[in-house]
Length: 292
Image (cartoon, rainbow, N blue to C red; front, side, top):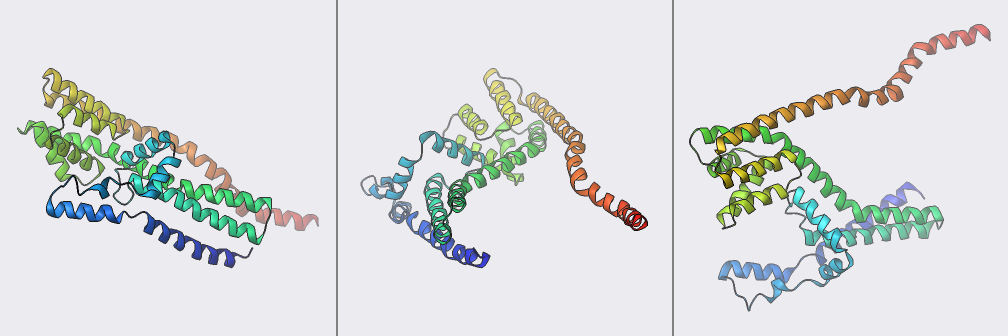
């Protein structure tokens, strides 16, 4: 097929799919009920619309395996639960995108029916279905790397605040207010959990569960043990900050040692052939002229 025809098909199918998903994924009755409750107070009898699950969302949950839903929820937790893509919208978006990919594959197959086109249509459908997973997983990895990089500096700030006379939660609040990254957001969320009445140890455990960074989990375990056995929090913060700085330096050294191996293949495949052509090319031409 001509590339122009494929581009025109994509320009028609993709906006229609996005428009259909936007229309069916909005729970208008739930939004109206939430606005009513915010304005007039909560009413149990008048909130049947909030508890009523949309038909499309219920179908998506029934078609999606429970373990897979749990994995998506875990990836969303690692990604910071972006407001633009909650779990319910993600479950609805995946079949909608797959439907758009299937329509595109069907158009391709109708224009040129062949096994290769059929396989291409299946690949497009699978790619559209798992595209939100790839985006969320990638965002979660980047967010955890950001937390890993921010942790030593944040622990140093908390240590300075504790040694200046602040309590541990006040030091967390100061670090969360001064920070702008993912770790500061997690600290603020932990403090909010404590303020609404959640037990302190459960809030700390939830902080560790929302992250895959081993240094942060080790810090949370040390804080829980210090709170349980009455150990000075300044000493714990000092040791954890020191270990975190050492591990960050070790990770940097490890990446520096891996760099020559990573550069080897681009050198062999991209740079050396060009150098050989530039250096040996004129000599090869002269030799061919001499023996011709």
